[in-house]
Length: 319
Image (cartoon, rainbow, N blue to C red; front, side, top):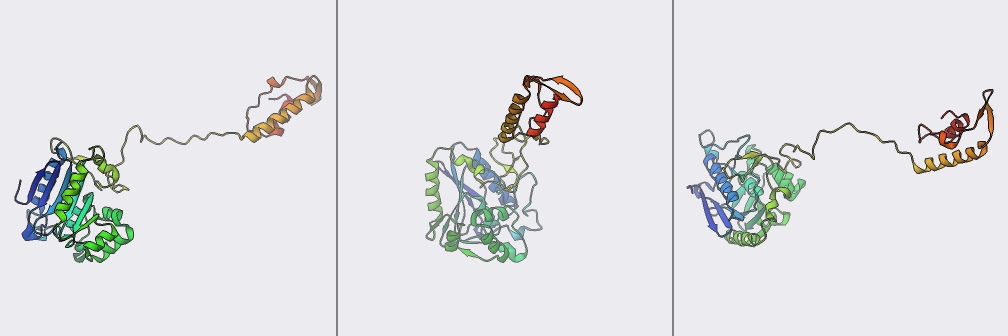
């Protein structure tokens, strides 16, 4: 494909390798674009089911290429496009496994966090090394890292910038598999073949599981373009709120006054007793004689009124 990114296909498994061993596979602007293109092609390939992301020369990725800063090869951020490290804003419909050997630090850590699973060999080292130069994680790491290992552990890594070896990464959940040195890629490819054997509808729910983008970009268009979407990082983080039949404009509340059954029963009892007293008789109210009215003529305007109010209106025939 390009001298910086290699793509190998073995059946349903696609292996994408960052091939800049002289720079510890640090990613500059052109390399980020090539990575994004490689994953777009993978997502659009109907015969590809699972991808493995790794680095050449015994290193996963040392982050962004600092030597490219101030040049035309500098990593750039596009509001509606790829992330600084390339595919880190994409919501693919297929799972991606990181095969980590050597350093996965700074931006390299963000690439590993973007993947759904991480297979680390004994030489792997994770860390927010950019903290040492006052540079934050800017490609989704501050959202994805707490999701994987919890807020407390994530704050430890983010604030201290300390290295995390493979064994500790496995213990805290940053790595899903721990294998001997040199076995990360074969182990990740074997895991990818296992996933590829499952029906495609299961791993295709990747964005719904919260492992997709924290931002905006979705891959998978036949024309190779990108589109703005709702990243599950929106809590979580990311993306605008969807609008449609399930998310209409909120209407003002309409309160329904429901009379408790106990009040209705008590009101009915009082009315029946009052009816038996006055039925078939006349009575004097306000100095005049009025004939009694059947109960059906007395229709309270408010069924929630008190029982004594019912009786008074019944006697007065003012209902």
